[in-house]
Image 1 (cartoon, rainbow, N blue to C red):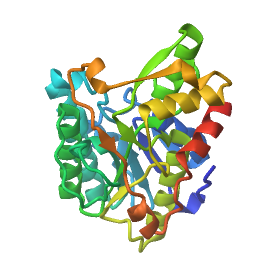
Image 2: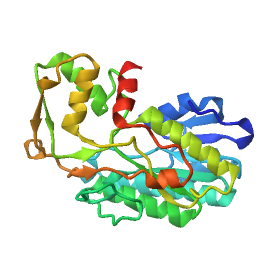
Image 3: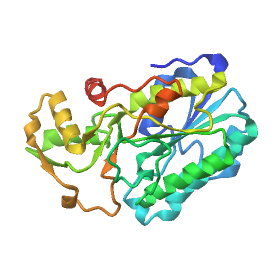
Image 4: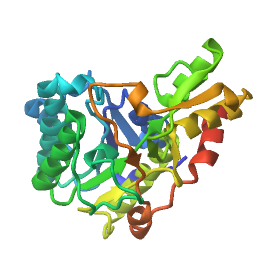
Length: 294
């Protein structure tokens, strides 16, 4: 757990009702000021000004608020745009005016998903889903509204808590309900444990508040190290809970058609994170073991 010093100011977490926001709330202690969507509608500029107008240069806003229903976004475009583009733009306008620092969370979906090596922040983007398109537009809006803002892209975030809806939690549930589970082998990425990502973001916030951070005004990639397919991840979950990984059967994405295309390759390079002087996130397999046993 990362502990920030009180003199560094407060860390406001928007979207605190989600899994990453929840981890930031828990792991950041009393420095974190959590704001769920019921506390602050970031799509309303007047609400943003009213709730956050007192912030100053010692404070950080970590924007975890997002429209993440990837398939629903294909038809719910206006709502996805409001939350993923208009909302972040409102926050950027606020931090630019007050001098507070903005860390905006983005996603691997801004890329085409057709790369064959870990992706760097400067690699060409080309989202194929409405969700990805709105997240990329949100990045652009944030950097235009507050050039000092830091965008952090991540991928395959999970908490793994039984009863949750993320992939790891879903595999734990399905192991108890089914004899076998079919999972795709042709989508590869870097599973990211939300607690590790939260610790990394809190370290980033502390570095930015201290001044002179090379992360200020940049795009960074943050995910657990290494890569695997969804099939590999599912087998690893089964192994961690003492189940036979052979009960996970391989299949392809063609067997599970969905409204929105998923990236075939979502591996993010961690070089930008390390070059910013931040602690690399541990290997995904080690992180999974901790998540499942937590």
